[in-house]
Length: 638
Image 1: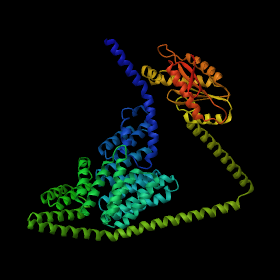
Image 2 (image 1 turned 135 degrees about the horizontal axis):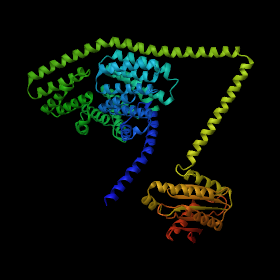
Image 3 (image 1 turned 45 degrees about the vertical axis):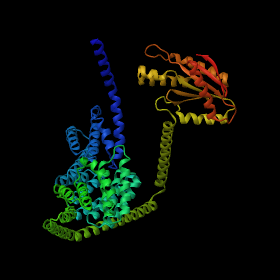
Image 4 (image 1 turned 90 degrees about the vertical axis):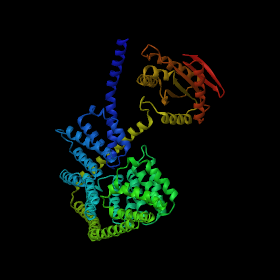
């Protein structure tokens, strides 16, 4: 018994080992697919989970593909707030990339993902240091796309410190890179994606400065870009920001509209976007509190509370506790209001503190007054006044500087547009001069090159079209016509020929073959059936796979008797297919004939299917023909 068990274990391990190359091949396809999404910077939890599922297999790949996998995983982890995992992956990438040539672009990308991780950790100084390194490396190595993203990240870092003018300066530089170096090289979808990222950030800055109407204009522009790009991740950011800005303007109906769209977008994913869902629910609760609909507010705060343990962002936590405190105050539960505001003590290190701190103290003042603690209430009101004064001083201090930066930002845009027009005009003048100065020999060579290029393009298009047509018309496994293609051939043949028969072939007990010998043996059987069928087909006869173990023959010019003979010969040829235990592969066949040119091919297939069903009832390994709509006729056992 122990020997038998050991042999079984050895066989299982051997099968697993032999399957690993195909797993690695599958991972290569995943890497290629996610490389395209990387340009949009739009990874979701879905991509992170997918990549992490290959963590014990990626080392089977060549070293460059291993590094590509690690940097994609690092990006997906950083963007789904798995910061520590992302930094660990970064260290592993650095170790494996030592001495590997030709991977500078991956090293830049990995450094960029590291800046994202430290940004989530709110280590602003560290983030700014790394981003400045990344900007210099991107410029030195000629990577304008990563330079663009690094400038956006640097602007985000300055915005996190409340340095709005510096943030706008970085966004202005990013716009210049976008206009001069990227807009002409990226696809339309990627241009829209980058335009959305830039507009969103500028709108966010104006929102932080309480200039909500200007913020809405930029965020709507970002939403338009992101919708054109199909960037669902950024669309959720846009919905949240618009909900917030309309709330601050007191336009509660529009605020509710965007928060509800955010909830729908966050819950329609494979894995729910918990952060955005939490933010939308808190946002709706704040709207309902402002409208004095306290029951609805309580409903959404209860839903938000269910996700509270998963939320680490201080700004969203502050808004949650402030909403809870306001709701308690509206119900005259003064002790609960004070309890909720106490949570804000650990979250006060934020540039939002001027605004939120004043609201917190105002709630406390009202709660103390409700409890009859008038001295504490007066003290809280004094803090409200002090915080409001600090906020006003702060915004007065930066407003002038920001206005200048805004002017520079818009002036840069105008300069870039003007430079682009001048460049186009110069190119047109140069082309005209060269055209006049060129000699007839040069013109002839140019024409020949143009013709050769056009011929090459036509050839590429023809080859590409044929390849796409092949992929669209042929079954991936058996390489014979797929269901769509064979049915189209049937439709065309019925319209062309007066006499035509169809055969539906079903491999007998195919599920048992799969269960007993494994799916690889089942695939082998299907491949051999397809190969024999192709050899058995004559001129103007067609064969295809219509699903699972079912195949279809189209036999123009053959009546029922000839078609049934064809089916018997084909079935006999299948006897050369041997199963591992020596068994033979058999098929059941249903045959039907058209009633003349232009007959209805669905009716013809239905009749053949009825005959096939009868063949199976007769014990399989049979050929059965359908002479009339209600009378299948048994022909013979094969």
